[in-house]
Image (cartoon, rainbow, N blue to C red; front, side):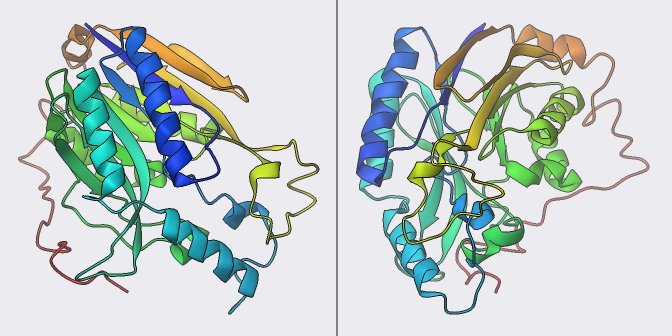
Amino acid sequence: MLRVAVVQAEVAPTLAETVEQTCVLARAAHRDGARLVVFPETWLPGYPIWLDVCRDVALWNHAPTKSVFTRYAEQSVVVGGPTTHALSKLAAELQITLVVGISERVDSGPGRGTLYNALLTFGPDGALCNHHRKLVPTYTERMVWGNGDTAGLRAVQTAHARIGGLICWEHWMPLSRQALHESGEDVHIAVWPTVHEMHHVASRQYAFEGRCFVLAAGSLMRARALPPELEAHESRVPDAETWVLRGGSAIIAPDGSYVVSPVYEQPTILHAELDLAMVRAESMTLDVTGHYSRPDCFTFAVRTDAATRDAAPTP
């Protein structure tokens, strides 16, 4: 049995405040018995939803957008820096597996100046077990983040379970899913900016296909927290109290059913006790890496040489 928690909350205005909020919320989840605690996509320093709900952000040389991007880059997380040190210390203090979505900034070497949409997994000893970068930023996200690589496209064994994760629309990339399935997951972390209906379709499909538990994590944000430099679309943001990120977090079983149903528009910590024996039980009927994989008919491989972190990112 594994007790898990998905944190759904509004992001604080600054990275430092959100790190402190992360510590408070993780400790609250731990007090209720959680051994695995999950935070949403780019929880640190928050998802740039202004790409979707504000005017003119794609205009060339648009001064307000450049100002917002500059601030977002400054608030993004350097892996190996003070923020990841604080997360490592938190995981070790609580002896939990901690999974956190970040906007990652590269400060030196190849890729300097590039941001990545990343997912970090810390073990109960504080070690950074996995560092996955989203392979393809989706649509307008490409103005903010670069293409990721395959270095973190895997599940890892922690003291509590075998954990893997994908970011947002990677759940509609069949080969990314298969790579994670073949890594073997007891629990899959599906991080989203907000988990709307189609995201639930993808998350439940993933659980059913992978025969694993899925923790779908989404954030909360009201329009009043949008960057002041930008003008919101009236059709999408009628007033300052409009939820531009609605949460929708949920916990899903290996048969695709909800263990904890979606929760919208309110801060919460979703808890569940997962019976990991269900992973094996459900694999009796479908195992896409075993008796349902047909390796005599199909060949699959992940190219680890295609994009490494020792090379400059693909333009």
